[in-house]
Every structure is written in structure tokens, then in C-alpha cells.
Image 1 (cartoon, rainbow, N blue to C red):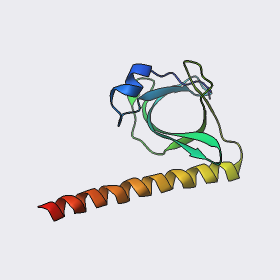
Image 2: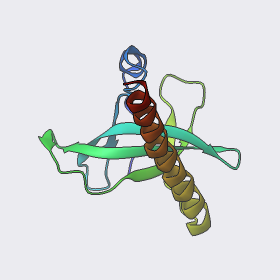
Image 3: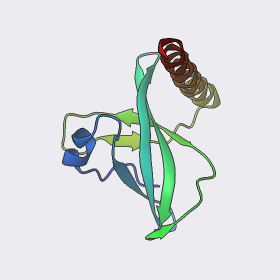
Image 4: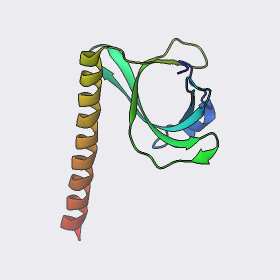
Length: 118
């Protein structure tokens, strides 16, 4: 899998809720377009969570979230790396799940506050 992200910097900052997309080139030269879900820290490293949306310009049903190590090297295009260590992957996956839980819980708080105001 390629360790380079193809991103459009304008896309990343147009909508704060939309982080844009990246195109991964797989080992078989298939292009996999993914939505960026979030970039998050764990133990001093950055990770990126991606949701596949297109494969070779054809829409795909998202089946799984992909998590990679994210490296902002100060260049135009950050790098991503496969996470080879199981413990590191588990820590990144657990942190991502906590983020999802916080988002889900935070949305419930907002809805409850809206209900109380009505």
C-alpha cells in the first residue's frame, strides 16, 4: 500500500466537519478513495481513521474503518504508514473507539439540551 496521501488542501479546510478525502494505492495498484474521519493522537504519535468510499472510481459499501499512523512531515502531502505492531494498532483502535463514543455521547447531550429548551 502506498504511504502517501493525495489530498486537496482546500478541501481539508472548506468545511471544518469535512476533513476531505485521500487516495490510497493498494499493492495491486487499485486506487482506494477514503473519507478522512479524524486524525487523533495516541502516546505521542498521530493516527488517521479512514472510511473507504470508492475503489477505482466505483462507489463501494463501507465495510471497515482503516487506521494508519499519520506523519505530518511539514511537506504538502503528509505520509501515512501501516501499523505493524499489534499492541500499537490496538491502542490506536481503542483511542478511535473512545472518540466515537464521545461523539455519540456528546450528540445525545446536545439533543437532550434541545429537548429541555422546548
